[in-house]
Length: 379
Image (cartoon, rainbow, N blue to C red; front, side):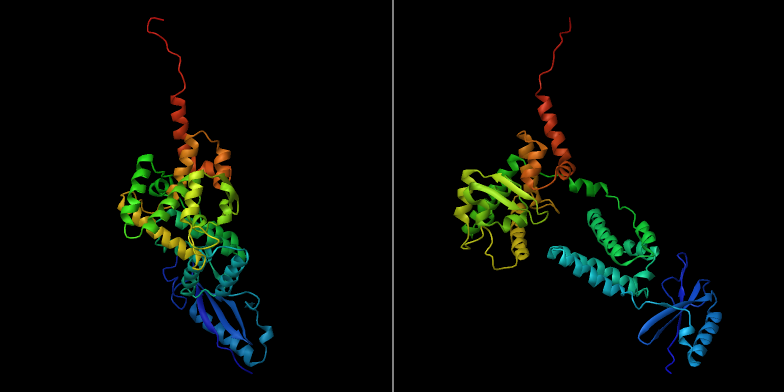
């Protein structure tokens, strides 16, 4: 009979200074035993805090195996539980099956990959071994400055934990409390529409920045006109199809939300789009052969260069400013929040959340024009 190799390890308490070293012998934390038998991994408590007594338990267990009594050994088997690495892959595969975009899947692979490596460094092999302390210290290791990025990463981690952790899930979720945004984060999230003067300055810069490529200059001008007029996101714009603007109407479903967008296009803008359309029989701004994300990235690179040359680039806020500009124009023209939401392909609550400041500003401008009753000093 093959006698398995039995290992002693410490399950450190949260306050133990040696919690990163499961082989540390001299702390007062509980000791456990771990071994592999017939291709299955087992572990059990040594029922002691002393490493020396754990050695005695180990020898007792070895004697049981030598006596041919493996079935008599009380143990916890992980046979039916996937490892953390397997759980990560299952979670990502499920997201791909749900139709998540490649950028989203790429972020999941990175974020959950760092979690997997962090836990592996602590000898955590199975989801049931993850503790609240592990997650708190994993989150503390993040170096992202953006609170929004940290919030979204935590949201993904919580989703992963729900998919594979059962008995320890409440404690794990409770450890990942809400991440508060800083004042800088809040300010960065505020809408940043271009003023009419800034928009004219930006458009005037186009033929200067792209002086060596008149075709690109014409297409960039058309792209800006289109995005400012419709508020469409950059990836929807780059993949705009000819049939999406048939008969002078924009009809499309947003890639991010799958919600419909329907707008009447200005006749001049409609003619401009048909004029600058490339040789593709299907698309306006994309050749249809390169990867969509690569094509979007190239347009964003050109936009960043243009805005930088015009002195209008705001770090972390690029093409979305065109969307903000469209909303600002619509609200200033008296469009209702329901109409704005329909034109953007968003829900009313989302529009209210993101554009509350713009709505308040425009409402104040309209209220300022309301006639007021005047009282003379002698009345």
